[in-house]
Length: 123
Image (cartoon, rainbow, N blue to C red; front, side):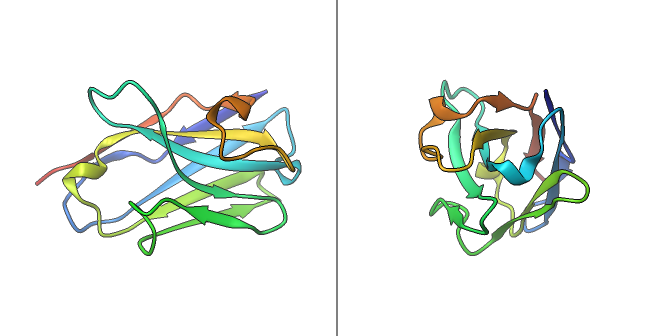
């Protein structure tokens, strides 16, 4: 099983980024996908948003209103669109998968993790 997160890079403040999480070895429509991020110097990964296979979504206050999680089951890929980027959005972004129906709000319940992709917001 492999989750591959990609799409990060250097973005100017106010810009947008679209991150992708491509899965192999599992079928994402059986899983809820969470996007986490770990800011520089921080020890933990924080849950940003979640998209479940039944269409349920959840967003942390820090990204609510300026982010969209979506999925393309045919491509077995989940996306995170993040707009109006701020310097404090600079972090390594990870996608992770937890079986549908599990406690998606519990970081330790995620079975599979991508390797992370760095987003740097700077002018």
